[in-house]
Amino acid sequence: GAGVSQSPSNKVTEKGKDVELRCDPISGHTALYWYRQSLGQGLEFLIYFQGNSAPDKSGLPSDRFSAERTGGSVSTLTIQRTQQEDSAVYLCASSFPETQYFGPGTRLLVL
Amino acid sequence: AQTVTQSQPEMSVQEAETVTLSCTYDTSENNYYLFWYKQPPSRQMILVIRQEAYKQQNATENRFSVNFQKAAKSFSLKISDSQLGDTAMYFCAFRGPNAGNMLTFGGGTRLMVKP
Image 1 (cartoon, rainbow over the protein chains, first blue to last red):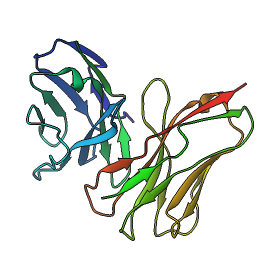
Image 2 (cartoon, chains in turn brown, orange):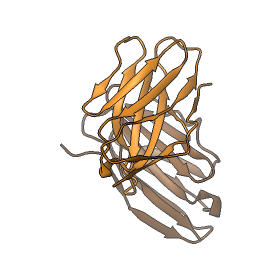
Image 3 (tube, chains in turn green, cyan):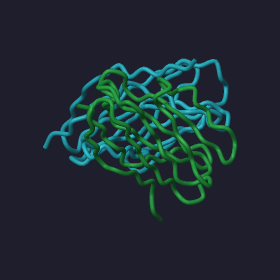
């Protein structure tokens, strides 16, 4: 079956612009996670969605970051007014029940 | 809060040899899950093996096996008969017992398999 997919694969943007990153989880997986992988910080949790429950946003680094999950499936991570320190690989994972399966990530470069 | 430590930033092994990657963690939980993920240059994070803390038996997946020492909070990965395709970053990860618990990752070990 299909795994977790993410788009775009790579994104280059200018400082101050907004970006949207998309994640399509494995069908039937109710839990979805976003992580950020950067050189200086390693792998960091950003946000977690479970079904129709309110998301756990405890890992979001600033109010410029937001995410939504529509219909319990596809999720979009939005970064407003991007900064150079936002450059990283953004990984999405879905799980059922406790093992997380990752997508290929989106590499974001903010110039 | 949980922490995960991988003390070997880089390791190398000859093809067909055996290598062990170390991982220690700190938690006050009794039930939890531990994982090893592999990240090749393609950057796709691939699950290698998982261990439930309540199971005493060490997990095994083909050439990959773990040595889980719960009292010592140690979770090492042994790769037998190393292959060139095993070259990758390896991350140890901890997950708590509750639904929605996120993964806490170690800093990773870069493994190079030499021909």
